[in-house]
Length: 464
Image (cartoon, rainbow, N blue to C red):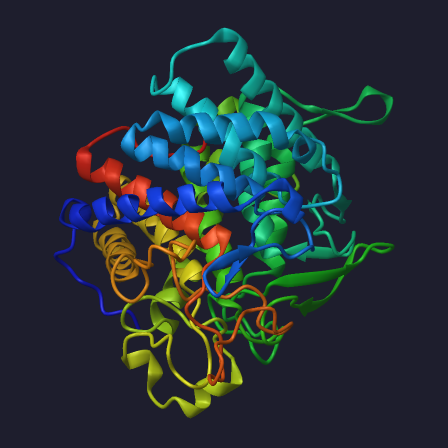
């Protein structure tokens, strides 16, 4: 269980954040120098400190250029802006119209979305043509992502994963960013017979489907129903629309919790909660009436999900808040009372996943801040301090990469343990010491969030 530091603040983390972005500058430059289009695909994870591709889907390319844009956000060094912006314009357009994935939030909001945000904040010069370009890109992305749709009975539905129409991934909660941004920009999806499909409604339908089937609430749904547990994938019969079973692609089993999948839910719902709070009541008047009875009911539902998964994370993570890759991984049984010790990436049984911690910490901080601002001071402070505590450990030894030859920023992340894709150093039983593109990006995104909170700068958010 996380040992929460009650005294840690964003301001007290400033020295660690300065170090984070100092290291990040070197890593972005290393990848820029060493990675070329001829290598085939986007950098995914490191092997012996060098980024390599893994052809599954190119879901990490937006993180590659997004890291450069975030580095500019933190430091104002224009060479990072120019690199991130130029590569976005040159290479990211196919991701806008990619109909075969659930990754639009990862690729497109991390690039076009960050660039639009910086322009709206006055951090880059105003240019009507450039602004219109970013806005059009985000409108397209949200609509294309929403067009990838599986309808279910009773007003439910979801954006299916690349596995097919039957597959609902927990990851996709973060791609709802693309739908919501497109909606906020005044866009909608046109379907058959000119049907106007509301993108906010699709986002809410997907969120509710994820909440019902991918999150557990301790209500005896099955023999492994632990409150706050998250399953990576839910499988549906697309002919009848009926739910069939839990599943997983990257976790140990459908009845354990893959911690990065859990982290996507823990970060995705609180940031959507923040966004929904800013939308007018009128925008919800005709939305998913079979599921919700207005804005307040949606907010209460999102709060329920967020708090449930946050409580699980606090209870099932080691003292420092950095989890092992799956809460049911079999080797954990050989590690004794591992939850009452700091995480140990060098153990002999199961790897930790620092990328899950980087994603989850942001969710804990956002949820805590939201609750404090809405009158739940004690509960909110618990989540906020837990997120800050996790960040404090994450931005310290042994998790930050100080080796000038290592291209990764955040060490000890895991990509696909069941497929044995992660590099295992010779003479060791498990992977450790490597980085992944989403781990680096989310470490930097967490750093931007905390930097702005510490400096009392505009709050870091994806939405308009």
